[in-house]
Image (tube, rainbow, N blue to C red; front, side, top):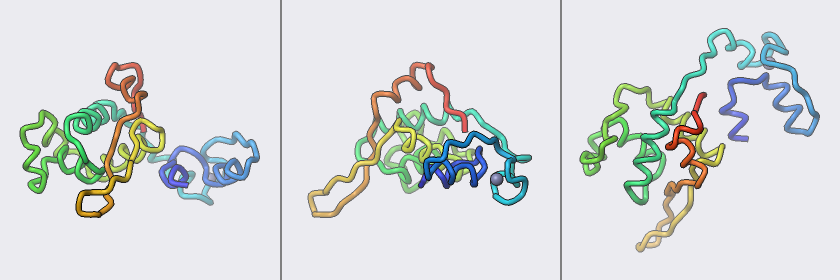
Length: 148
Ligand SMILES: [Zn+2]
């Protein structure tokens, strides 16, 4: 269902039909103006986020125990993550919109490039951390591009 929310490229009605196992292939614009995606299709722009994705993957590889928020803050050079200021990627995307970094992170989780795992800390709290799936290497090797 998270995929449903993130998807901006298909008519919601067709997405729902397919969710319930009808095999429909109508394109964006099918319902004309009865869903947000069809209404917004005139403004839909696909961007290449491969460089941002590579930076995300490198940060996850370099630092342990990061969740999505921390990765975003490191890339944006947030003061609360100044302990990471020695990383090459710290502040590299300070001009990027936070919402775009969120979108890319969610895209990477849904498409199984990264996974969120829950770990229990020594003082008994659960926290979320990010790990890479092997497939993410294809992005670093320039075999896969991330366009959203
Ligand atoms: Zn529609």
